[in-house]
Length: 400
Image (cartoon, rainbow, N blue to C red; front, side, top):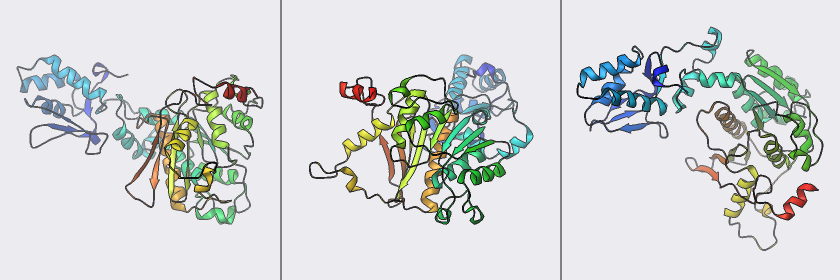
């Protein structure tokens, strides 16, 4: 973790440029809610400090500049304020070397400033988050609408290695919402067409593919382990067959019906973070899960079921309140939004920018623009997947 002493030329990030309010306070970090902050500055020396942190001076020279304008100020106060600004994520090092070739500097010259803008962790270089992404290995299951848009975003953003899995072939009905395919791809395996499109988008990223159907938890566990076979059965998923081959699972498939439950169990067993997304009519959501941190998918689902009041008669199936069809109604808009949210969640977990608390589902209801969708629940101690206090019935079910 960088300290003031390790910075050669500390500067306030360009996106976080400060200004003075009418009452003399210092606002820094932009006017975006969740980023900006306001600092009381009755003596005016904080403003002098942020003005001096313009990337042309070393830390000691910054302090000297403040003390020249405010001779009665203890030097340690100025140095501590500089450290506080660094810890809050408002500072980087203008003298930090650029650790990537010129080609990547140009390619990511628009994305890196956005990561720097959203990053509220102390960093030496604005390229730190991009380097994390460059080193990441991601498993993507499903390259249709949601998965196609997510894959496009991940590859364009510079994820190091993306492995795509899908069992289907391209159909004419896919083309209203699945961005990786063209009419000439009809009848072709989706994975083959998707990999070709993604490789053409960014040749600096390793994109691989596999035409395969996930039919059971063991299939998913094997994919997570990079092809190493795992014995079938829920109890076997609790054994440790070695570390996962990926840094993140991105789930964009909705078949079989239990695939999210399987992903939850498999990722808990492997200690692998995962994200998922999709749409139900005009409701578009994405979920973020990290084993050991916050609610798992099953906790979140149980919490949401407990909050809903469907006013059903006793014994009626809750599924009747939400119609399901053989195919999910969708357009390029709903697929694009869900894929974008999915990619955002993935990038956030891979880079730490922005810092997302896992165990959450968030999204958009297109019927109510401006009305956010946010689902969060505490981790449940008796959760059948991650709970610390399981019932005897749950333990028996796992053994079977």
